[in-house]
Picture 1 (tube, rainbow, N blue to C red):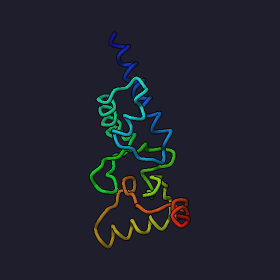
Picture 2: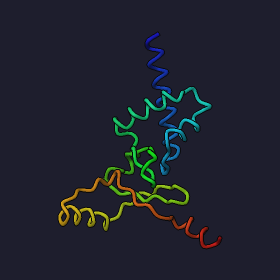
Picture 3: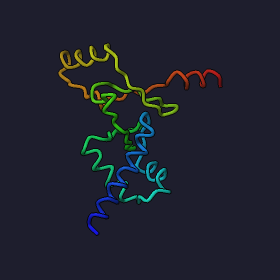
Picture 4: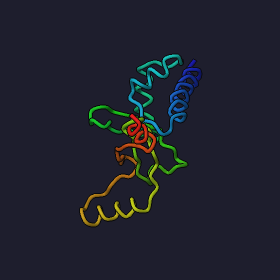
Length: 140
């Protein structure tokens, strides 16, 4: 029976990771994740436990929402080297854009050297408006 339980936990983990992998450029609250997985064989308390473990394992990233109060989670795609670059987040559609830009490397070096502060690219998110949402705003 113990082996079945471990298989089930692995299956639940894969359901959660599968959902996050399917939305690599989005962030979700635990409530949004639980709602999205409501038809799956995974309960709310399991989602909370798995999220905590996946954060510890470095598979998902925990960030604060724009208002600073809401906690959001995002899948970390190791192939995109999310640890190495900054991210842009659209306040209109919520899309995450991977910012692999030499200018940001210069900024990171400048801030460290001139201000004695080391930035963490993986968890640094710059909020703004993507080109699509800006175009929609202009049309309205």
